[in-house]
Image (cartoon, rainbow, N blue to C red; front, side):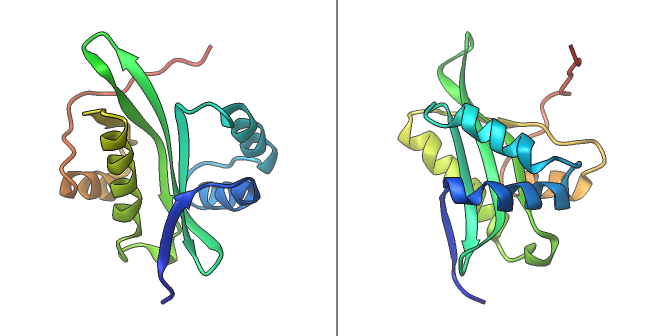
Length: 143
């Protein structure tokens, strides 16, 4: 297997990220991903890292940095982590998470948070192996 390069997403990667998202999560149009990327572009709070193998995007992690009263240095929330099924169990997800942890250290942030669906039990095991703890439920309401 060619080496994995973890790098910042570039504009040319939007459609590949959309394809990985659709393969792992719920349907999402190319247009929706392009629009979201445009909104995030230029805002240093948002980062998307991709796993690139020989020019092909096989995974990604998308993050946002935020502040909270009880976390004055802020925190990074992972909004999505996905690796194509045929590339799983090769350390790519771990490499993406390590890049987020590196970003947190660069920004002097001491907490990374994420939510994971109840049914994604394999993902839960993955996060726990990396040292993440289950602390709460994540609630949301569509407005």
